[in-house]
Structure formats: structure tokens, C-alpha cells
Amino acid sequence: MDNNQILKKLSIALNLRHEDVREVFHLGGRDLSTSQTGARMVNPSNKNFKALDDEELETFLNSLITY
Image 1 (spheres, rainbow, N blue to C red):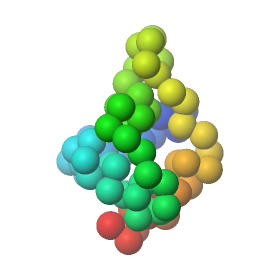
Image 2: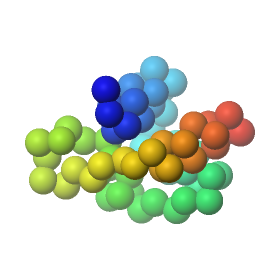
Image 3: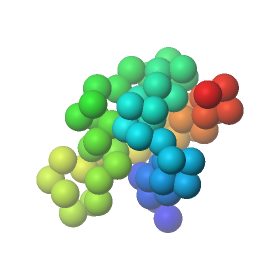
Image 4: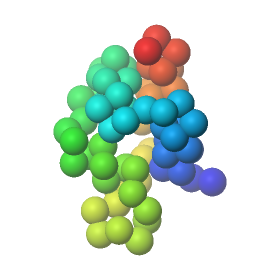
């Protein structure tokens, strides 16, 4: 399971909308646009797919605790 799948599964399990995911990233000091957030939540076969690196996932998880 890659980082994008972890992000997507967590957002589904916690019932987080894209706006909520953006807010969690914002709490961690990463400001993502709507399209950047969506690019990290789509399937790898999508042309807009952007891989989520380990640092971004770590930021999300740490900020999720605060959120």
C-alpha cells in the first residue's frame, strides 16, 4: 500500500472531505490547492495523479492528531 492509498483510506474511514484534508495539511504548514489535494486522492491511472511522498504523509498524520 502506497502513501496515496493510506491518505485515501484514512479520509474515507474518518469521513474527511477534500476541504478537511486541505485543512489538516494546512495545520501542518503545507498549503495545498484544491487541485493538488485531488491529485493526491485519485487513482494512479489518472493523468492528474501526484505521488504523496513520505514527508507529506508524515505531516498529514501529525496534523491529524491536532485536527
